[in-house]
Length: 310
Image 1 (tube, rainbow, N blue to C red):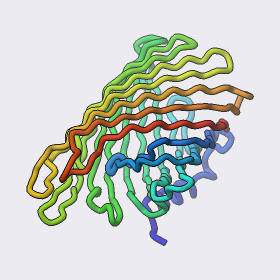
Image 2 (image 1 turned 180 degrees about the vertical axis):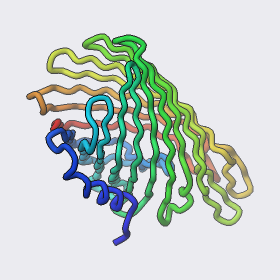
Image 3 (image 1 turned 60 degrees about the horizontal axis):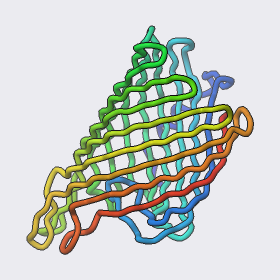
């Protein structure tokens, strides 16, 4: 069995767990079932659609264990597990394991966060990618209700066969503004994503997997009583760094992707609840028609599930 960066990092950090504050550990988990009417390969780098629908099981687990510090400065170990298991289209199954330390510092109206992590991604039950990630963020509270945040993340990526051409790096820079007036929370922002991958050459043919992406997003959430309602919208424009080449023809890929998500949750107890979620994604690509593959698709994702905070 291959030894992964994530496994090694998680083992080293868990060895330090007894020194942590186990009573302050926290966690969140959810289990959902649903249906996607046009299954799309989730890794963005190789996103294609099947033109087939399928049922799925989704599992999410996130947790943290304080290791040192208290009050305004805390060092914690964080980990997460995500799995999406389709009933029939097993080549599209996805699993992600992530672990690493996180440092949080609070100074007056400023909130600082620095996180390092290792991630292992499995696709169709085989190794897909391994990531080493460094992420930093700062949030400043202009007032009790208004704050802004700047976030930067860099990923060093190693991809496995037959996806070696995805090896390289990905960087994300984001700026957002949040307004909170109980029971409402409103947030909007912009994200820039840069990719530098090996790309794929097959004889005279070439495919670029290094897009530059611009994303505008907005979120609205309201929490009246035991209910939680959330609406998220996203508009993303991608331009790939180099033109695709097929059969002597050349074209630079450009995509517009629209995504809208609605979620409703109901608290059953202080820690448990039920949720329902609907997501519609439409990707409009200029790359289609012979001799190029068609990257345009529309998919709807429906899910019901239960969640618990620990």
